[in-house]
Length: 77
Image (cartoon, rainbow, N blue to C red):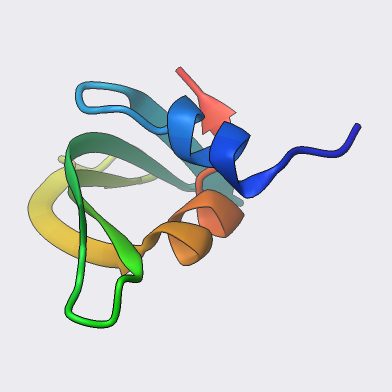
């Protein structure tokens, strides 16, 4: 199934939570905002929770270009 870039932008909305897992590392990303930079490139500001095995999760805020965010966080929670 092919998606247009407009469809991808619509699927990433404030408050939406996405997940990525690699081995024992699980990441959850909650979208805080989406905005364009000075060049018009959309960026996603998100709160990232990283859990490694049984350890206590770490939480921080990050920003990625929308395309990079969608490539990493493909699974909606």
